[in-house]
Image 1 (cartoon, rainbow, N blue to C red):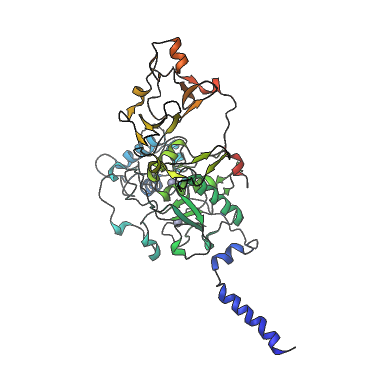
Image 2: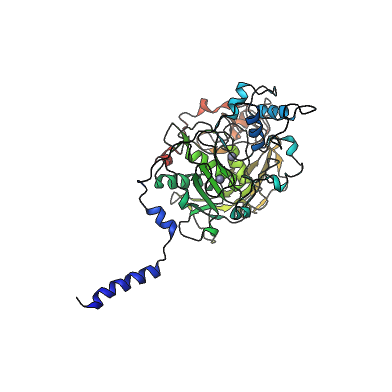
Length: 474
Ligand SMILES: [Zn+2]
Ligand SMILES: [Zn+2]
C-alpha cells in the first residue's frame, strides 16, 4: 500500500476533529449508561425529637435560629410560636406542642426552599449574618446564598427573575438520575417547562452544547453532597429537591422518582414543575391545588397547573393572546400587519392590565370585556381603546337580577353560547347566565347585563373531562 493512502484517512480524522471539537455534554448524553451500578439508597434521619424539630424549623424558615427556644430559655417560647405557625399552615390544631401529627407533617416529603409564610420574626427583620450561612463554593457564590434566595422570598412575594423571554436549560452531564433513562429524564423536563410556557410568554430551549455560563437553568440529580452545592441532601424521605434563584435545580437521587404515568413514587414531572416555578420567581403557597405547595401531594395522571399558579406566574411575566384563523382552523403565528403571536395583551389592547382572569367578545356592541379580579374593562375594538366609563366593578357592569348570587370577583371563564344566545360566566363548579334580549322582553324589569342566580355547571354541561393526559405518556 502506498504510504499516502494510510496518511490521508488520518489527516481526515484530524480535520473532522478540528471541525467538531469534543463536547463533554454531548458525549455524556449519547453514551450507554446501562453499566452503572445502582448505589444503596440512604434514608433521611426522621424528625422525632425536640432537637431535630428545631433544626427543621430553622432550615425551612419558621425560626431564625436553630437553637431558638431551647429548654431553659427565659420568656415565652419562640419554639412553641414557630410550631404553632407551622401547625396553622398545615391545618393542624395550633397547640405549639410537638405532637405526633406535627412530627408527621414535618417528615412529609418536601421541597428544600424555605417557607416564606414561616417565621414572623423574619419578616422585615435583620438579615442573618453572612457568617451564619453555609460556605458556598466559589461558582455558587455568584448565585443567591441559600436555596430559594431567602431575602427575596422573605415576605412570600413573587419576583420576576428573567427579563428575557427565551431561556436555555440543560440536564447537566454529571447530574443524571440513576433511576430513569436519560431520554425519560429529558422528556419529563421538556414537559415541565412546557407547562409554564403554555401560560406565559416564556420559551424554554434545551441547550446541550453551548457554554455552560450561557445556560439559564441547570438541572441535575445527586445524593448527599452533590454537584458542588452547599446544601446536602438528606437521603430518601423529607427533602426531595431544591432550587437556586437564577438557575440551578437539584433533585435528591435517593428519592424514588417516577414518570408521570406511574402511580407510585414521587412524580419527577410534578417536582420539576414546582422547582421551575421557584426559578421563575414563585414562592411557596399553602393554597390547595397549587403546584407551589411545599409538600409533595400524591400525583394524579392528569396533573395540571392550578388556576392560582397561572395567575401568579402571569402576574410576573404577563398575559398573552393568540389570533385564531378560522379558515385554516389554527392559531396564527403572524398577521398581515407583521405582528407575531402569541403577543402580550398589553401590546394588542392598550390600557388592559395583566394578569387577566378571562375575556369575551360582544359582537353586536363590538366590545371585548376583559375581567380582572373584581373589575371589568370594556374595550372598543374600532377605536382600539377602553371605553371612558370603564373599568367598572363587575357587580355594577353585570348586576345580580333577583338575588345576591354573584361571582363578585375572579371568574374563571366567560363565553358567548350561540346555542343559548347568551353569555355565561363560570367560576368553580357554578355558572351564571347573563340576561339576553329575549329575557328582557319577557321581563322588562331585568337590568341590562343582569346575572341570573348561580346554577351548577354539572347540571347543564355533561362529560366535561380533564385534558392533558395524552401529553403525559412517555
Ligand atoms: Zn419549593
Ligand atoms: Zn443542591
